[in-house]
Amino acid sequence: MSGLGVIGLGTMGWHMARRLAEAGYAPLVHDLVEERRGQLEAAGARWASSVREIADAADIVLVSLPTPAVVEQVLIGPDGLRTGRAIGIVIDTSTTGPEVSRRCAGALSERGIDLVDAPVSGGPSGADSGSLSVMASGNPAALARAMPLLEVIGGQIFELGSEPGQGQMMKVINNTICATAALASFEGLVLGAKAGLDAETMLAVLNASSGRSFATEVKVPQCIVRRNFPQRFSTDLLHKDVRLCLEEGARLGVPMWVSDSARQMLSFAIGQGGGDMDYGNLIRHYESWAGAQFGPAPEGGPQEAA
Image (cartoon, rainbow, N blue to C red; front, side, top):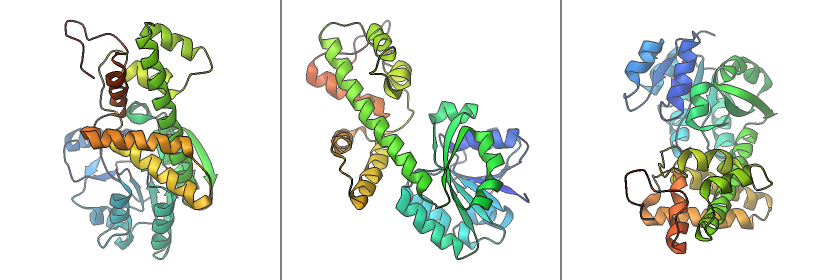
């Protein structure tokens, strides 16, 4: 490998760039915001002033970007990666949906560039520890070259096929199931709170029984039961992923009524001004409607209004 680039140093991307730097790859990194620049340079990364600078210097570029539109701009826009002199492989760890992935792969291939579609799951803690699950698809030779890098950021790497977009399909399915399970859990937990059940005991029962899910095992214990609501994954981004999944369901003729109900709830929360907040805050709407709160008020403070 003659050079590695990383573009997108947000909540997930900066952890991936740091791990790659600490693994000795000395990546050339770029983001519109320079907040993490000092930390990454201290870890061994080098700063680039533009996307084009990276595309002219690195033969493999990993991107971690927030929306499909931004991914398209960075990959195949007028000053995007496809215009670079050195680049041969793009590893896209963003969640764009299959359609955008296929479109980008086609435009990149015209310039002899392979797209490895490799969305990830596991949140900031997984990115920090290198334990992400990676859902990868693409040209087998390109995927083989990307594998050592994916093994630095991921604990489990799943190969979904040789066509770009298959990894994205798996990712939006995963996140849609996550959303529907989370909202169902929020409803049930608020019902239990209204009935007088203890929050911690409810979680213990669910996680020893058939009602367990990522929401009950991770999301609620880490983000909700103590009423701390840290910013992990925004409602806007979860809504985007569910919408992309529903679009694929419509394209393939698969009914997704439960998932569409989850999309409607996410859309409602966004309409109430909560789009940029972590999706754990959605439980507050159920609490407000029920007149009950799941979990104790913070020590030394009054109960939070839902």
